[in-house]
Figure 1 (cartoon, rainbow, N blue to C red):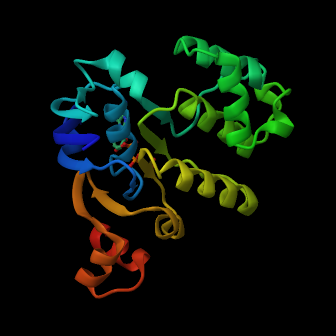
Figure 2: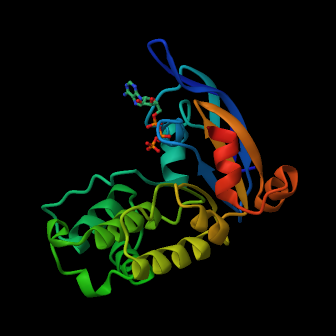
Length: 235
Ligand SMILES: Nc1ncnc2c1ncn2[C@@H]1O[C@H](COP(=O)(O)OP(=O)(O)OP(=O)(O)O)[C@@H](O)[C@H]1O
């Protein structure tokens, strides 16, 4: 298993933002992480990356504990946060070279070039990040998440705000990345889940209310629409 989560919880004062969740994810699969606003998706993802300390429980990526082995975790994991914080005063190439160097990658310049091609940033690569459209900024965010060829990819709403053309391109890219990595992605778009995800976790008020393949969910609830299942489980 490349993601192993056991009894993971995060409390903010009295509020249980994430309430003792456990799940696993396998390599070569894309896991959809769904839930209504405020359900605890981003909080869980931040704990998976090691950026946020859990109140209790553990999360391991490829056997490395996100709190105890944070350096190893950062090396094997790529993360696209919800509102990708980017150094907007930097140029695209300059920023990606900076990221490549922080990972001490051999052939950093070559990795930058290959990653720019992979995420389709070629036409915008000479621009400053502040000049880019939302979709292209999102591509820079994805580029920084994959430049070090991580085994585990954590994507928080990777396609939010993209136009239909960009959406198709980025989904295709994520699908390809999912072939040899473990990808966990959060989204509110059920179509996206159907198009991309092998398995789905639905979280509501900090607790997991479903963890299954899409087919299993549809069979179990005798419903063909994932939206209907989502509403049934979360309202
Ligand atoms: N730093 C914080 N301090 C206090 N409460 C917080 C903090 N961060 C998150 N929360 C609360 O924890 C709960 C879960 O938030 P989280 O951002 O994980 O939800 P989400 O499922 O990602 O939502 P969305 O779909 O709207 O992005 C929310 O009620 C939120 O207000």
